[in-house]
Length: 322
Image 1 (cartoon, helix red, strand yellow):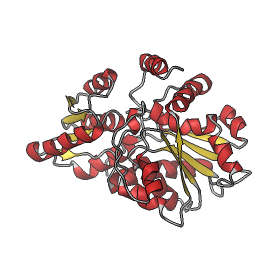
Image 2 (cartoon, rainbow, N blue to C red):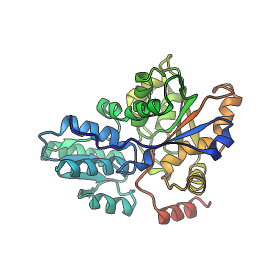
Image 3 (tube, one colour):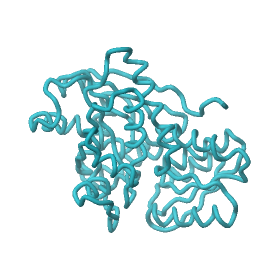
Image 4 (cartoon, one colour):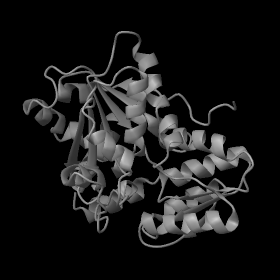
């Protein structure tokens, strides 16, 4: 088996976040992956399994999945075509090209770009890399929980896990990892922004639904339909899966606070999870009796994000009037 493309990321304790929630907060720093986000775990694993005799890979992504696919393809010496929607920031195009990928802009949202990626995989004979809906991706993402278990050591387990949901790939990977670690009882708090809430909409409707449009600025959470596996998990009685929403303003405020306090810049998609700490959502869930009081250590997945810089941050603050 070839070596992994991902790195073993730091598990850091945050004093300021711990003070806010009244329990130890551990940050799993997936922003420090070579491609800027957790996506490289699953995509690296999938590409190792599927692209041994490949003419190249094709991936539809407005950001992180594309960055991971481009990085892995470059390391494997195969060409990468990344199809992105027109809503993707210019800096994403630049970063993908820096990784040596061919960038194609198609449609307004991810779903349009994905249809083109599927077409190219057929006509050009390329290996299609799905951004979130594939068992090999979840298997790869599960490795982050194995690392957390190794870092915490025997006998210690998180009181809850906090993460952002886009299409559901990270959620499925984390649940897989919790199962592997024997931690199925650990509650998972899954956060989305209003306007990019395909998982929450499915949970409320009791079936997988497709959003009409993505109206949130957290574009990297912008899948209109959650993967069916994530929805299945929400119906599973052995798991405690809590779906919550924050506003774009709360997510952006969280990005800003995280930058000030932890000296790390992440994108709004990641800020959605962080907002659960900064906006008091975790404390509210405790008050409602949906999370325990006192709570064991809170594990926050800092999923990262490659499509943010200071200019983008300033633009978002202007747009959302923060």
